[in-house]
Image (cartoon, rainbow, N blue to C red; front, side, top):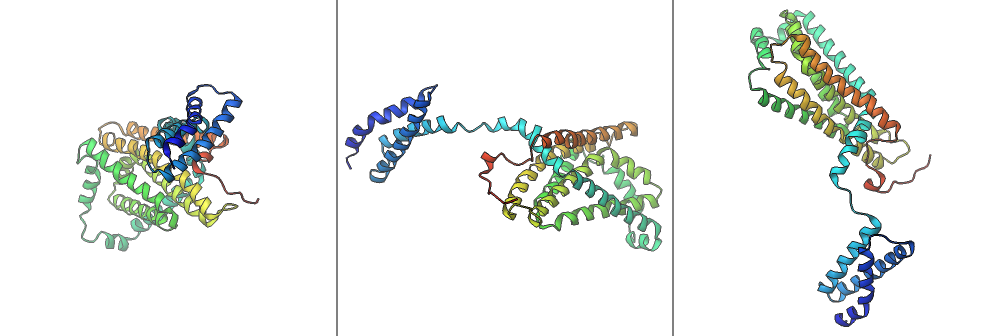
Length: 330
């Protein structure tokens, strides 16, 4: 094929395509013409690249086609423009969907921790077995000094990193249905054992006072992560009218955004643990700060999330972003 002759024969149509693509306002007839010119130009570009390979004429036509395509498909949205929607609608809606699972995780943790604490504190043989060779006074000192051994910023960063990683594991590995309950059980067991040791030494008040400022938001964040992980697991166990693949994809996309919210929540918890718990302030003030932080999170999940859910949000991507849905019966 003679590329020069072919280009000369089609140049008028390509020029018209470029003009329409650059024009700000299009009438109905012009919009129809733009689509027709675009389809014809795409065929011409295919011919050029098939017979002549890469060429200057082909590059010019490709640029004109790109501009034309943007006129009837629209430019992709700036990712930063999606941030307000994420935090105002998608994230709270995702949190709202798992609100009852969060409470179930919290209740289960409290029950397991309480059972261990009562059992160990009330049975001297079990207590002696667990504390054999352990300096209990050192355990008490380590528990208190744990919050002031490092600088506030370093300690906050360390706690935040560890907790955020734990929360991400709960969600990411929740799909297998075993790992997340195991983490919750281990956490509850450790709380119960520590509480039993402190109670045996007459320091149960110290245990609660040092945990209460940061622990309210920190523990609830872990409960939220566990709930999200178990909800993803349940999506493929009981998908309803959806296929298992579709259910897993939709709930996985929606609920993994919870990680973003938990990273921020655990960041706040880490700051409280690193800068507030160690202070010589009255305990009601320190615990009050933690209560306010937890209250703000619960308001975001239950109130803002409820509004987003009633508005039709699920936390998943919009249909255009996530792709076409498969039709199902029912």
